[in-house]
Length: 376
Image (cartoon, rainbow, N blue to C red):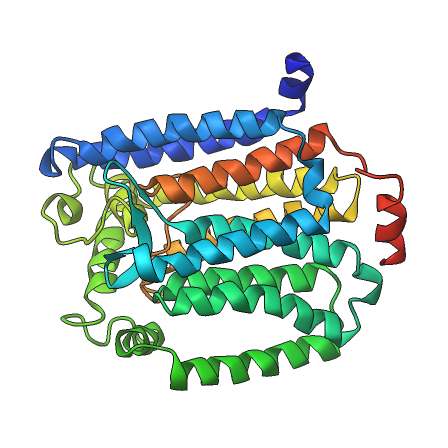
C-alpha cells in the first residue's frame, strides 16, 4: 500500500520545491552569525523536516471525509473560534495580536484558516457550479470569507486579510462567473473596502495603503522598509554580491531578512539571475499543482487544487511585490523560503491533501458525483 501511495505523489513537485527551500536556508545561513548563532537557520531546518513529515503523512490519509459538508462546516467554525480566542489568549507581535505563544514555538492560526477556507469554498462551489450564475451563491460564499476577514482585520493583520480576499475572489472566478456578476463583485468590493476604511482600518494600515500608491514617498517613515528592500534587490545587479556578502541584511539595514524580506536578501546575494531562477521554480510549482488539480475525479477535488494554486500565487505575488516596492508591506511570508513554522506546515498540509485526493480520487458516497453534476 505504501508503495502505491508513494507512486501517486508528484515527485516533480517535490523536486521543484526543494531548491526553493534550500535557497531560503542558504540565505538565512549567510547572515546567521549576526543573528544569535544561526538560530533562524537551525529552527527552520527543523520546521522543514516537520513539514515534509506532515506532507507525507497527509498523502497517506484518506481525506474523502472532507467531502462531507457537515465536517467542513465544523472545521470552519472551530478554526473561527480559534481566531476569536486570539483576542483573549493571543500574543502581540509587530502590532498585531495574531499569535499563540507556547514558549518553545509560536502558532499563527490564520494560516490554518486560509487552508480551511479553500476547502469549504471548494465544497460550496462544487455542488453549485450549475447555479453559480445565480448571484445569491456569490454572496453566500462571501459570508464564508467575511467571517475570517473581519476577525483577521481586527487583530489587525492587513496582509492575511488580503490573502483571504484573493482566495475568495480567485475561487469565485474559476467557478464560472458571468461578466455581469464580475462587475457586481467589483462594486461590492469597493463598498466593502470603503466601509473597512471608514470603520475598521487602523491609522498605520491606512498609512501602508498610502505607501502602496507611492512606496518610496516617505523613505524615512512608512516607506523605509520598501526603500531598503529595493536597495537590496537593485544592488544585487545581474549575478549578485555573492553568498555572505549581502550588506543590507548583514548590516541590518534590511528589516526581517529572514521572513518578510528574504527575497530581497536572496536577490542581493544572487542577483537577477538567481531571482529569475526562483521565479521559474515557483512557476513550475504552480504548474504541478494545477496539473494535479486537472486529475481530480470530482469538482471538489479540481476546485480544491485550483484554490491551493491561488493560495500560493497570492502569497508569492504579494511578498515579491512587497520586496520590489510594488505592494504594501504586509508581513506575508514567501512560500517555502520565509522563516516560520505556521505557514510552512500549512503549505505542506495543503499539498499533502492534494496528493491524498490523487490517491483516493473517487466519490465518498454513491450520490456524490451525481449531486455535483446536478448542482445539488
